[in-house]
Image (tube, rainbow, N blue to C red; front, side, top):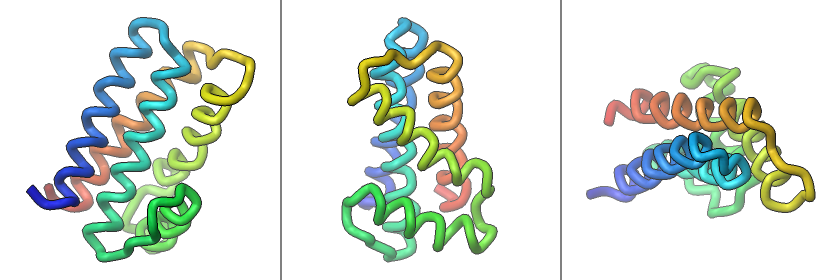
Length: 124
């Protein structure tokens, strides 16, 4: 198994776990898993292009946008999920509030769509 395939499998696992968590009403943890599903899928896409920005979140976000979104290879709205779901994860992980069911469902759906889209982009 290549590193790209390993990252995609990890992303898919995180998306599945996020779906189970949101179904169980654990919205905060679901959002965290949803974000990491997207993050790992973005890393897989970048790794496939030999664009290795390091492991920082900001570096991955910028490199993914530059490499795939701005070039039209990846849907612009879905590409925005990387930052939007990260903001929800930050709220879930570090703030006092609890993420609502609707927002958590949206984040998990974005993760599932993003991971699927990366797999299609890479033809894997």
